[in-house]
Image (cartoon, rainbow, N blue to C red; front, side, top):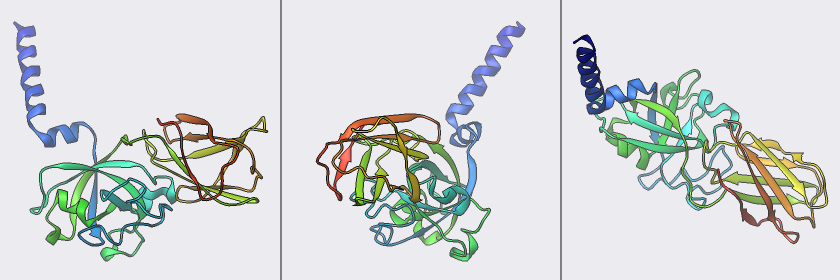
Length: 247
């Protein structure tokens, strides 16, 4: 009899959990933050920024993007990361969630101090904000959590620079989305060269790799590594973009 009662109570609790978005969110351990928006209704003004993505539309990130406050931005280490967000506790809120990609930094002192440390803040593109709340609100509270990123195709590498300075922009990264380490190896070498983070997801080295096929290894914040062997052939040129493996 006791076992039957317990099973009934568990069934009721499980049913309530499935029928309430708020209960699901709280059970999943979401965090609280704030959101504003910048740019135009077509996301104009949000096309580039501190992550080094010169054109987020052309790179495939679309308009569902966000500039993060400094604690979330982590000096660029969060660039490319994906967050599921939902407006919470405001009359302007819509009851749905979206996934946005971190592509920029929300500078301190912006929007009445909402971007100041230590607040968790998302300065969204206007199209993104419009999907979770009425834009007239200007500012709302929200709940957020890190989620994995779903990307089409492989990781992409745009190689810029010259013989004595190579800079690689790494983007379209799936899985955790962020990049915490990049290593490169020429076809005439037996060892990997670890690149230095320049800004955002631009990585650089002074090694001379001209005339060699290039392999590139990318490691994300969860410690996983994907290696794209000979992603660039021997006759690659500066300014070209190459597509490798994916998480």
